Length: 274
Image (cartoon, rainbow, N blue to C red):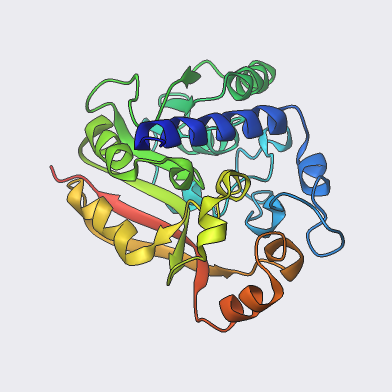
């Protein structure tokens, strides 16, 4: 019988392998790797979740792999000179947008658990010539970052991939300065996802079956110590039948669609008291 730790470790390994492979592709290749509504594919079409960064200052196309589910830096209230930490920084997209906002006097740190993503982000940083953007290999559940480091934390569709969300938010609380805050985009549910979705590691790596109920998610954030919670943006995510049918039989699919269960992207703000 598998222990919770074994299951957690296996899920993390699945995510690492998935994102290591994604790191070697462009955004267009990632979107094209699963045709969503036009063909039968065996993974999640990340374009279903992604928002458009192209009009944001600091946007760098090479760093945008289309893996997010919101625009957390747009709502992050980043000021000049801030220290910003991006959790699950990927190829550096949100870090470079944050760098535009914090300026040359600030500091931007990207944390990612996939070495190939770190390598890609550092290569992008070198091209841009930024000296105040850095990337650190590490686990969100046990961050290799000091206490009270960040004025602002951002994250885009990553907490969903973390098996131990209470620990991840406790760590987020630890690294934020008193009076600091976060802006995090993530996927949550209203109602319970079918068990077959929750058990499939491929869907987990695609941010769907890692989703938990919105009320539970917000309660985890509160229990970590955060206050002033505010949902800055919310949108419904509609998974095509061609994707769901990979996991659900016809009758199960119909029952799911009629159940009232919803999958949403939210961008959440929360503050650490001074």
